[in-house]
Structure formats: C-alpha cells, structure tokens
Amino acid sequence: MAVLLVLVLLVVALVAVLVWFAARAFAPDPATARQTCTAVVADPTDADVSFRAELAPDQTAYAALVVGVANQRGLPARAATIGIATAIQESGLRNIDYGDRDSLGLFQQRPSQGWGSEGEVQDPLYATGAFYDALVQVDGYTDLDVTVAAQEVQRSGFPEAYADHEGEGRALASALYGLAPASLACELRPVAVDADRPAPAEQAATLLADLDDFGPTGWQAGDVVAAPEPAATDATGTEPAGRPAAVVELSAAGADRPDRVAWALAHSAVAMASARDVVRVEVAGQVWDRDRSDAGWTTPEEAGDAPDEGTVRVTLG
Picture 1 (cartoon, one colour):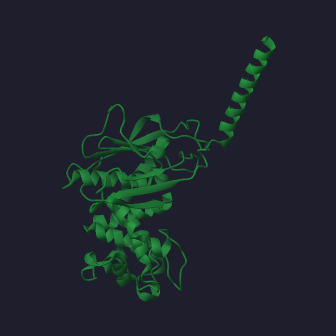
Picture 2: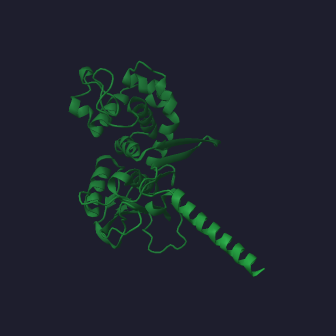
C-alpha cells in the first residue's frame, strides 16, 4: 500500500510539472504578442446596432490625425467619418509612397491633379487638410451618403467602395471626437527600451506637439514631470528598464464641453500610445493601463490620486 501511495504521489507530481512546463511553453510572449486597437460605438438611433473598427497601432495613430484635424477645424463628426472611410479605402490608413499612376499618401492624392507636390501629399497633416478643404466645398456633404461625399472629392474608379468602411469611420470618429467615452482601447506590448529610443520626457513633448497640431481645441497642458517610479519594462516585458517615466496632465476644464474634449484627448493618447510610449491614461475615473491593456478601460478599485474632473493624466515610459 505504501509503495502504491508513493507511485500515486509521483504521478501527481509528474503531471503537475508537465502542466507547468506546458503553461510556460504556450503562454503568450509579451515581447511578440499581437498588437491591435479597437473602437466600438453604439448606434445612437438603434440600440441593437454598433459600429466597430479594428486596426494596427500605426493605423490608429493616423486615424487620430484624420479625426483630430476635422475636430480642430470645427467640422462635424460626419466629416471625420468620411475622412476615415476614404483613407481606409485609399491607403489602408497608412502613409504609403506608391499608388495608381502618381497617387501618394494617406488619401492617394495625385500631384498631377493639383493636390500638391509629392512631398506635400505624403505629409499626413497636409494631405488631411487638403482632403477637408475639398470636402467642405461639396454642397450638403453632411447629408450625403459617405460613399457619395467621398467620391465627390476623390473621383475614384471605384466610387461605391467607400461605403464598405462607413462603420469603421463612424466608430473612430465618435471615439476620437470624445462622443463615446471609453470606446477606443489598444492592446500593446510593453515598451521596448533601447539606447536609441527617445526618453519619456521627449516623447511627452512630441505627444503634446501632436495634440497641438491635430487635437481638439480648448485644452491646456501642465508641466511634464518625472513619475515617482519607472513605468517602462525592457523588451522582454518582464524586467524593469529603470528609466524614469514622465507624466503630463491635460486640462479641458476651460472647454465648452470639457467631458467631450477630455475623452477626445484620452482616446487620442491611447491611439498614439505605441508610437509615443504611453503606458497609462487616466480620465473621468477610468484607466487604460498598458500592462493590462487586454482589459481595455477599467475603473480602479481605489480612487487614489485621480486627476481632477475634465483632466487627462498621461504617463509615458
């Protein structure tokens, strides 16, 4: 009986060891895990319908630019929906350096057709502005179907194709205009720290410049300060990198709609998190945390040192 008991215990121990090794072998590697950003927004006219966009981080950063330019110009969200649908169809929301004939950039604009020089149409900020300059000249564009309005600007050989991306456009426009709180989040790998990567304070300055170029209006940035503890990890995602994180607060308290502007800023920071090494965004009692980004936006169990109402706190690592 004693021998049998020993054998049973050995088998149990062996199974436990095998399970442990299997878990280690098949666990996702945070350094190589797939990265994706998702926006999901309910249709305000039909509770059973929602609009969804799922993009890579680099595409989402361009989406923030396309929507942000419309928002900064005071255009309606419908303009941003048209802009996003157009850019997805034309370039896959990437600033490509090739296309049909001499078409280039996010919107595949042709220098030979008067859209600007090759360098200009490959500047995403210029290209997006040029698109909206043309769109607002379309009479009643906000009342037109997305594909009709886009075609009036683009004169594409595939005029119906823009309709395929209307849902994605509506999801991203609503999220990045701040109309749908906690509706855009990204699942990202840990920040890969290397000697050539800009320091968090530099990334914070670049993020602020981005938001100034194509973010909403009516907000102010506080000073960039060092966080009390490092927020970044090394390329394996397991060991502290040791460099100090940077924190900056963005206040929308003076805006006409501070809640909307705050969420527009927060979603934009998440949309650019991969490029700008954003590791945490806090707004309106909600937190996006890069270390737990698969959870999306969450409500902390303890309020702690939460930012003031109408304020977004961004941590870069």
